[in-house]
Image (tube, rainbow, N blue to C red; front, side, top):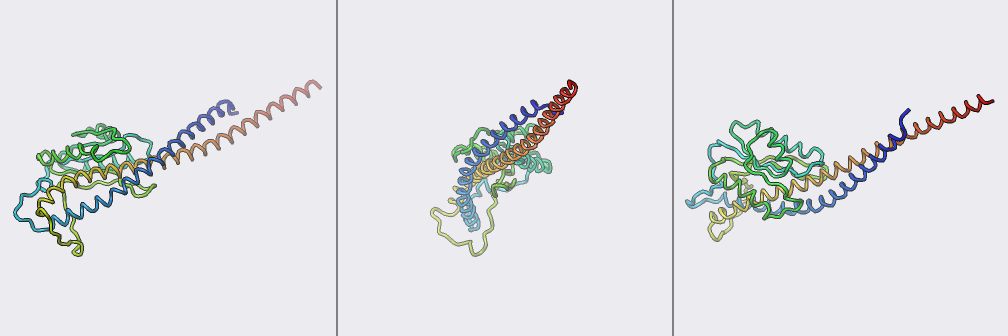
Length: 285
């Protein structure tokens, strides 16, 4: 016969866990809405600056020196900007982005260093004993543009000084509340997109187009890093809300199963007590 006292203790414990996960779900839902708004609000700006740079790069240049961020050279060393959450409890999000970066590093035939954002990424890079150029933690749930500038500056300085020849950025892109997509794409050297003929309009730039392009390129890299961090935060909060909701549902299901076991054990105990009473009464008779 199952111990009724132990079952009651387990039910109480699971019920307390369900209260905690429910509270965490509500907090994550509140943060998720704000993070989604910030991430989605930054997409039009990111798309427009990409379009402008593509248009500027398509114009014939009058002998100006190529900006260092556009320079393509033989790849002897690669850097990866690896963006992860500081905290866990967000389902498979951390494992997915770590797997994406780890697979990429293993496939390279040249040395790879990492610039890591987030404690989970730092732990992963240390665990696989990969070279770490810099780490940034505790950015919070609402980092500002200025908070991410040191990250951009590290990778741009290393690239322009020739210490690294190519930079990739790995982050989790927010698709929907239930879907977060790990993404790894090239960040440096900047490769302007090829615009369709109908979109490649001619503009008059003041000052000349090369000067405008050279001014926009650092802002483009900074905005790309900032937008990737916003996307990662929105994905993190969405994944955490879904994970906590699933945990709450599982806890409720377990409470139901334990309650059924408790009722059966209690019924069995009452039946045994009645049998003892009946048996004792029969013996006395």
